[in-house]
Image (cartoon, rainbow, N blue to C red):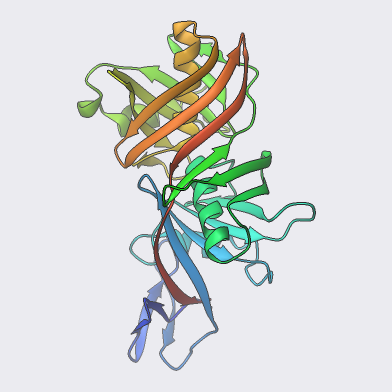
Length: 300
C-alpha cells in the first residue's frame, strides 16, 4: 500500500476520489487508492548541504523498515515523492549518540555520504539528540563532528585514507565512498554526465560503481563537478568527492603536513582540512553548510 496524501509545512495535499498512484520509479500504475484509504502519517525532514539534498527520518522507534527499498525510491523521487539525492535514517546505536543509515536515491543502502553526514548532525542537534559535538556511527565506521558558532556550518571528521591509486592520468581513492578524480579544462562547459556515466559503467568500475569527479584549479582552490553513482546524475555537490579531490590534488602537488583546501561546487563552497604524511592522510575534516529546508508528513 502506498501513500495517498502528504503534508508540507502543515498544508494538506490530498487526493480527491480515486486516483492512480505511480509506484516510485517503476513502470506503470500499479493500483488505485482514494482519500478514504488514509494511512498513518510519519514525519520527515528535508535538509541540504551545498545543494546536496536529503530526506531525513528519525527512526529511533524502528517504524521505517530498512529493507524497504521501494519506499526509499518513492520518497526520493522528485515527481512522485518528496524528492532528494538520498534518504537517511537516524537510529539508536550503543556507545554512540546515533547511527546514520544512508540510502542512495535508487533505494540501495549506500556508502558514506559526507554532505549527508553533516546534515544528519545538524538534524540531530535540532531535535535535541546531541549538543554542539557528537560521535556517531556510519557505514564506514565512527565519525566525530562539531557544530560551529557560524550558523549552519558543520565540521565532520572523515575516515583515514592510506592509499591513492592511479588510472591513467586520473586518481582513484576511497574517502568513505569510491572516487575517480580527473583534471580537465573548461569545466563549466564539460559534459560531466556523459563522461561520468561512461567511466562509472566502464569495464573497470561497472560492477561496484564509482563516483566521478572532474576538477579545475582556481586561484584559491579547486572547482569540482561530480557524477554520483546511485543518483546516476550530476549532483550540486559531493562531500566525499570534495574530500577525494583535496587529497588527490595534494598528492599531485607533492604537499606534506597540515593542508587546507577550499572546494567550490555548483551548490556552494566546502573546506577540507587534513594532514598528509607520504601515502597516509589523517585528521581529515570536511567542513560546510548543513541547512534545514522544511518538515512535512507523509503516509506509508
